[in-house]
Length: 135
Length: 126
Image: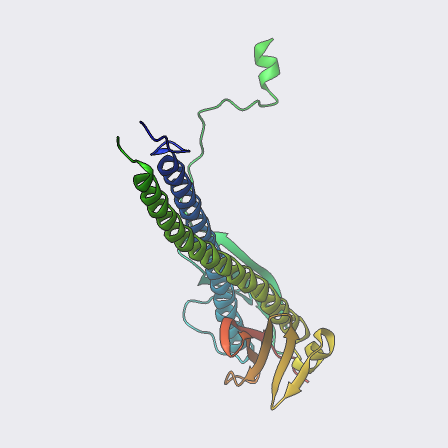
């Protein structure tokens, strides 16, 4: 006389293994997403901190110029002082200021990229003169 | 005649234990991820507000006027702005140059510093 079990042996094991695998995969994806977001946020925060640090450096130099002191690294030409402050590995803050005895005028206060850039010319971009060449 | 019922019962119990342990661990991970996401979001928001305050200070060159524009109260020479979840503390510093104004703007949550910026501006000669 064979006693049958209501559910086959092994079926629940398969279900539980599947559920555990799903839970594990989703939790790992969750952790990876949060960590990636955290790294991105950290980089953007660092960019802001670097920007304000360079801005502060430029303001200090400008204040010294207003007092009549010309710090090292500042170039002067016809009353226009030009200097730059490093902002990050690939950016600098370029400043040009015209200082008089009583006032100053900011001619340039610009962040510029110092990274090397190479144009990608794999694709032919349509130029206005190409129509005449085709004819 | 073989009774397979005890084997099935043991299997059910073991599988239930395994599922409970796995669910508890994964639930802890989900909760940690949620807390981290909230912290990242709060830090981003706090940094934006700190930047706003810094830019207003630079444009007005007068902390008292900036406090009037953005609100908040001044306690013991610290300008405090209360925002949901955190506060912004602004403290004016001595830059050593009478023509250069300086202040630190800090976002604080329950005594813990979230972000801090040091901002400089040109003082207006009277």
